[in-house]
Length: 204
Image (cartoon, rainbow, N blue to C red; front, top):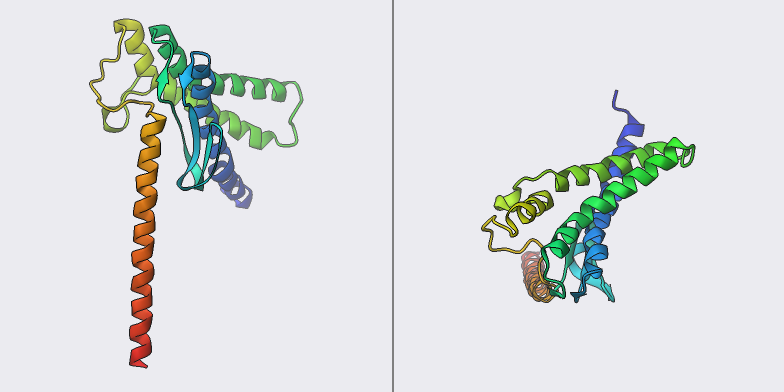
């Protein structure tokens, strides 16, 4: 039966474990790509207006499960480099899941066993999502499909014009435009509220 403890663990899963697992997945791109000399790498956490930017880390106001990795260019153009980069999220989550499971199997982390079991669950969820070749939203290939195409054909053949990993400079321009639109909408809404209050005052 689904009880209060289960509801509590669901909240922990949705608001803590899943966002952290998502960030770790994106960190897989960052760690592996740094070995191949990427230019202007960036890890973004959350969405909306920026709270702060620290070197390669960009933290946004609305933090939940939305995290992503961007870079402008890469020094190594080899097929091997791209295979490694797209395998990064798979490797980091798989290694993390195995490590935590090994600790649990040897009697460590017992006090928070349910929490760590859920952590393993989400880590392996991302492993399966990334490793099994398939097309996802709008026909975009997942990492497994990209790796498969690179190994079999030597290139991506999905015909999708959008890059899977967006350029940091391009993402920054999009963010600036989103912030301008957000501020404009906010300003219009505030003006509308002021006018409504004025109408109400006039009626009274």
